[in-house]
Image (cartoon, rainbow, N blue to C red; front, side, top):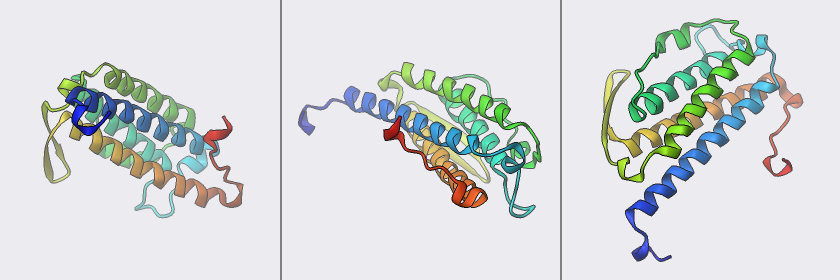
Length: 174
């Protein structure tokens, strides 16, 4: 297919398929890291002013729900962003992962059922000291970039905690 024969629907469908793949890949990497840690390590923080992996998992879960489940999917938001960072645990690792798994499944369901024609619908939301006026495509893109950034932060923290005991993920071996 040449660029001249690709229609908007095909581009939108390709974007949504890639968004689902990126969501699944980030989720798998988060699970991979958390599976190597115990509850104490999940809630460890280098300094009191910094986040633990547990805080970041709560934050990713809250952000996915607020942006994709609520803004894109239309469900009411139940997010308490300050609590995501104030939490000191120990919410058990398995409970954090189950909450994340549930919201990722909701997001995937929304993305798989989203018509490419809806990607340009306008959406607005308030961030910290800023307002975002985007379309659905922009909300999805911003959310996945946000998730990916925090996922890499968790990979770094996991490697720092475990040192040489960190087991690398090898998707080709699966």
